[in-house]
Length: 167
Image 1 (cartoon, helix red, strand yellow):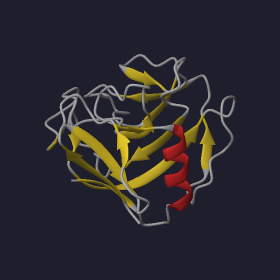
Image 2: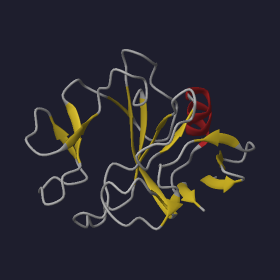
Image 3: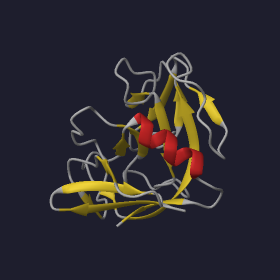
């Protein structure tokens, strides 16, 4: 049962076999990713790598992936040319990075998508996640975002070998 993202009539949806649910994608839409910072949600079929959550905000989600609690010093490197590009880092970190411990709720739940990680190609794009959506489903920087309820329901049904398919 893959998580399948599709676009229809200017809106985007995700389906994991339980019917289409609204989601947000990158401000650059769904396309072949050109590079870091392009805002594109990459078209393709991507493995699911890791699951992070804010233990101070939500309970550990049910999933075949072992949930890892996000710590205040967790980050993700998004600096092309850095040896840790598109990998988790410990903050403070000198190169450009995302902070995983956010004050909004977008990263209360983060499913790491296996985009540009095997091998990492410098500058191709980093930090492609499935995370929580803003209330208005505003576009992301390239990730897929859904409601907490939909994310928890999908995670509980995922099995080893399932993928994020962005059509």
